[in-house]
Amino acid sequence: MSEKNEAIRDAKALGMPKMLLLGLQHMFAMFGATILVPILVNNYFHGEGLSIQVTLFFAGIGTLFFHICSKLKVPAFLGSSFAFLGGFSTVAELNTGIFADMTYGEKLPYACGGIVVAGLLYLVLALVIKLVGINRVMRFLPPVVTGPIIICIGLSLAPSAVSNASTNWFLAIVALAVIIIFNIWGKGMWKIIPILMGVVISYVVALIMNAIGFTNPDGSAILDFNGVASASVVGLPPFTLCKFDLTAILVMAPIALATMMEHIGDISAISATVGENFIQDPGLHRTLIGDGLATSISAMFGGPANTTYGENTGVLELSRVYDPKVIRLAAVYAIILSFIPKMAAVIASLPAAIIGGVSFILYGMISAIGVRNVVENKVDFTKSRNLIIAAVILVSGLGFSNGLTFTIGGTSITLTALAIAAIAGIVLNAILPGNEYTFGENPSGDINRGVSFNPQPKKESK
Image 1 (tube, rainbow, N blue to C red):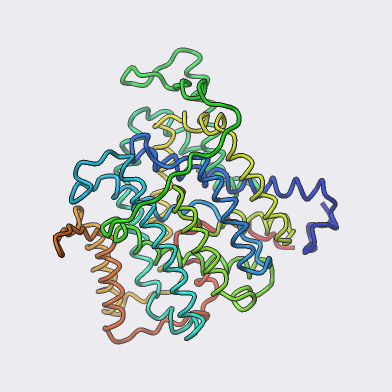
Image 2 (image 1 turned 90 degrees about the vertical axis):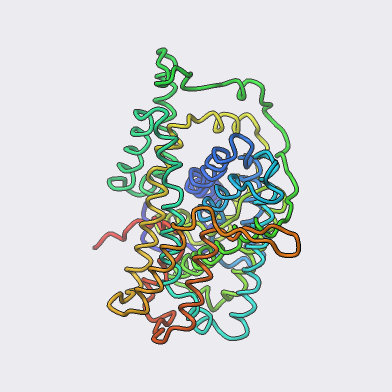
């Protein structure tokens, strides 16, 4: 395709048919990762978790809202955030205070309420950045703090991946192998959608096995289509209102430290890809507001947190079409899909073993990205201060498995391991001498912040 060598900033020049196809390409890029979040959360909540329809609806609405907040200038898609998976898992297992006698389904709105507050923290950061500048703010959130926190997020979820995969190791290994193959040897668009391909191909294998008569090792059926048969073709997403509790807020809110850094990294990546400084114009404060409000609005009505997607940045690099209108088309597609319960039911029938195989690599990659965060930003561990900060965060994040529960004014509050780790890391970084991190000095490192896979195809050398 000859246009590929030259960037296209107005997609209208390509004609409406190509614009529609490019929008579809962006939708496929985000689809696998976006639907995986509610699938995993449903597993934590034993079938009473997030709705795939609601997730797709707010991915689309959140993306459109983000574009309005960023003056229609930034070609970013907002999909489900993986960073909050650990928070969902923790809330599902809370058994203190008001959560003691709740069902899993009754706990979910409180997890969403915590995400609403986490999203509002974006507004606080946006205001502070607007007032004092990004460099001063980022000194309190250097990679030596955020990197180990991300490592803890991934490692805390590892037992869940093994548990699911063990229901049928063959299917789990198929899903895992497909993701690895597409991630390592895939070219172009195929390299950008390894999660989607892992889900689709392993599901096809499950269909074949089920048709032949194979069962899981425990004798249960590999696939259950009861939900698919009863689902209607067209219907409204099942919105639910969030609820608020301080314990759930303290579970979810600290995770915003990772996702806000991810946002900054993704905006830096999009700026580098497109060749425009979106941190300056429309301004990082505007993009943070758009992302934060999109997250809060989604969670308010029973959806997951939203985040800017590296997958779609990869499509920008691949297609060389930088027009944000194409991303908005993908958002419209997502909204349309959210009104098809039958499709959501097919996705929900995904065997636990496939979920385990996908999450087997996903959770490990989250932790590995935390390591990359530290390496790419050249954190110097020959310095005692950095070693101490990382050590305290890792031990706090992995050691306080049951958190710290205390009572204030008759109310039982649980401070989770991740919250303890985040507080300890930020405080130590602030009081220990020798903080030399400056945002902007290492652009490639700044891009690799937060729980972002940034699957951008490498530019071919001429």
